[in-house]
Length: 328
Image (tube, rainbow, N blue to C red; front, side, top):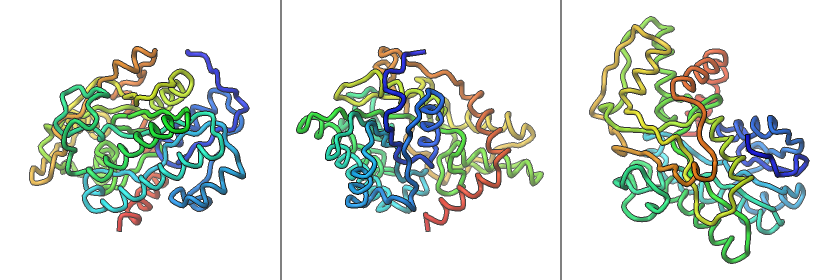
């Protein structure tokens, strides 16, 4: 294990602690012995409101900030809520970064997304691929907001000397994910579909697309570990890719989920629906050179996530219902 150099009694603000990533970051910080973790629910603090965020920072004075909040979703959500995706995310990034500068935050880690890279970027995608081509149309508003977040951190570093860094994770999954069938990402949506087919005694499951698209998946607790690692060991200007460096097709993903959850099921592919970007694999050479690699295989991560989903089914459905309500 790498040494923990951040004072364990430092005030650490996790912006977005109720989401998939934020909950994992809080778990990792507690595991590492941090005793002064600051959080604020959406009801307590609207991160899109600069005045409210300034007031909160002035009152709480965090030393370190993990900026992992945002509005997220899959292809359907991005296609139907483009204004929400660009507005919410640009505002959240802007208010938290600006307040962190105003109130003397020691260090901030901003999390983006692998969708920042061009649709047809050379694979695997290096950090240098940013802004070298057209984005994937199905999530362009979200990607533009995430790119703005990177440039925001770079600008505050350049103009004000702020130690603000950025990490770009690949596709994530794990406990506390959004399992809504319309607004979630592919893995949790498929997990819920397969589970509910099993419970209902159905052996056919419809999946969007052709199954040919290639994707990389990172277990969220591995990401949380990488976040702490970057906070401890990276102070550079450029963003850092965070992933596994391993890709699978959506067809292979669906087959793995069926193998874990409902071995008797079969897939019916709806090729009238979009596949999204044909391939999205991160080059993680930079992060590996710093000394971090993922620990959880896809099969093990799916096992753990499904165990959580099964044991927390009512809660998971509540997350899905809240996400579905927000989408309409």
